[in-house]
Length: 122
Image (tube, rainbow, N blue to C red):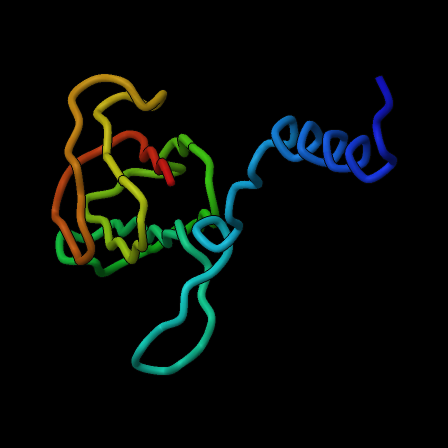
């Protein structure tokens, strides 16, 4: 049996094409465009501001999380309200200082709630 060079090359290329996995698109993991401003913004970002007062006033401590990940932040001093600005993240306040115990799922905005720690999952 004789095979032509073209047949062998075609068979080799077909084998390689079937063995190579399809790359996952990067777009869902990188950035989105804010339709109002036209600016690129990261997905999965959250800013958490923890306030001593009942209505997001008084002494404030804050932290931010960007992209994928999970973070537990113990409250550095007694807090009575929390302000959330989030895109594609889940934020919960917890009664314990280790992100355990009773919890409250907070959306965007200001919430009057007593808590010992905050968990963020993007």
